[in-house]
Image (cartoon, rainbow, N blue to C red; front, side, top):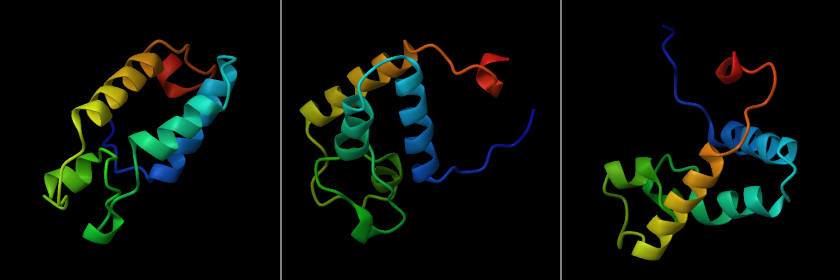
Length: 94
């Protein structure tokens, strides 16, 4: 098993955009993910109010934590992503 290093959020966002497009969904789903679900957060100034971010939460960088609605949005989008068909030729589909 290979060690997986932390992947830049820009790469994750691009991979999700490609996956959503390959599943014939509108770009609005990846835009929603990019705007309301995640953000790149490497220091306290990177925290976006109302946008859940595991790294920001683990370091207690939030002045007020995201709402239950924001958490539910993340859960629902995660469920949507899990239901997508994998891209051909990816490690996950091998």
